[in-house]
Amino acid sequence: FNAPFKVKYFLNYKGLLDKNNEKVDYNLAYSQNIINEFNSKNNSSVIFLLVSDHNFFKPSQNKNRVGGAYYAGKYKYHFGQKTLPITNGMIEITRDTPMSQSKYQIREIFQKIELFYCYEDSALALEAMLCGCPVVFLPNKYFKLPIGSIELSGLGYAWGNSPEQIRHAKKTINLARKRYI
Image 1 (cartoon, rainbow, N blue to C red):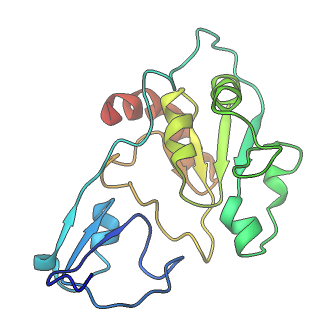
Image 2 (image 1 turned 60 degrees about the vertical axis):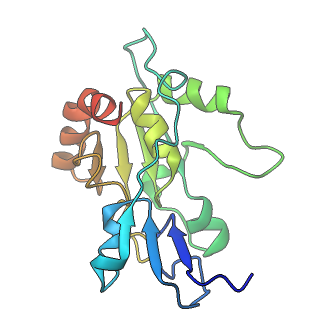
């Protein structure tokens, strides 16, 4: 369009999935962590949009949570990595396949399980937290920091699967929902 001013909105870390290095005049990002990657803070802003419906994704009355589930979409299918033994035998949540769960099935899973493991950042992590399910992020070479960690104040999730981190996630899960809302 030969626009005189070019803006790019980043939903993930620069260069992780987007290989377009076209020069832009202004950067917008989903999170402060993404903006922190840019050298010029003057030409960058954050627009943290609420992407998950807290009225739909909410805790159930059932307090007996058991088992776990995991998501490894890009980690497994885009980057070709193998999942860790910790998630063996758990429910795998997928997207974009004919066998993927519906949002209703995903909500039901999140309302029943004790922990949700993520090999990457995903709105699924927010949806799990909104359902009262603590999230365990599994750091790897493609996942160095949760995108919304600043906006969510580190509540409701564990960074790695250490017992201390999991205790923190369980202890703060109710605060994470309040913070998001």
